[in-house]
Length: 447
Image (tube, rainbow, N blue to C red):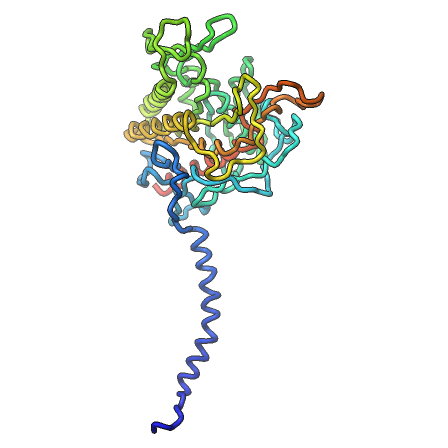
């Protein structure tokens, strides 16, 4: 017994052989399931402290809607690429990096006829076109390419208005160019004052898109050549040039910031509160952050009161501050010569850019609380400050004018390092805007 040869059971041998056959097929079956899980529900890795937006908790795109029964944490935006999908993934579009994209934009400077001349970098002869081939890649999710037909469906029989300064116009013209790849818009209204007020209609969807010039949102008297060399702002009164049309607007996109850096005198009623950079006037110097806050607060309060009281509701988007990239003073031959985006950690959001963004994001959050009592009122900040900061290569620069070096390099060439080339990085703003609108629509259907 002790020296005998061990006998292997035939049953055990068959089981071992069967396991060897089944194991590879089991691995092959589980592998795609694991890949599917990782793709749609990526691991939540700890975020680097250098990627935190300064002075405030990192703000993710979130929505506040009193018409929806779905309650979401205030710091998460849920994105889904499949309509009606219930297992949604939190996505923070404010944190990410620019990655090279071989597909490029949906349109170019020759196929879109609504680009302002100063932002048409391609037709003005900009020789380097690498700036067209970058896409914003959020850390935790995928930002889909813009879907013009989806956007048009979401504004079918509706009126969306862009209100504010030239950045509002820049974003509007980007949207028009992308929508025009699916449906041609008709210009149905234009004022005689430098196209500051325009309106288009998309007959295919009976959708209306407008732009209103209002660089402060509140009532303002702009400086002029024949008058005082400063603006005059009434911080307690909204600008009726756009506010008087609120009853005919379904969605409003507000964009302000750069004009608050100009010399100005500030009033509430007939009382002068102070001024910004007004030598020679006997007024108290006031910082423009507080003024920006007051102007935005008055505007959001007016929208809430006028539309909330009717019960019709309205969708409101506040696009956050868009940083400039002048190297040197803008009025002293400053330029933006960089040809590539900043890498992660290479450029921090700080100083004035961070404070302007912080003021806008926090005021939107406060207005959300005020809007909760009204049915159908939805409000969101489109937080594009950091992703825009990382694109010093996306401005017209000297190509705000046609072929600026046709006669050789001159001693001084004016540069535009504030606005964005079309196509260009600003198209990403509208890609994120579409995701906010899709989320709102999904909430409405589930609610």
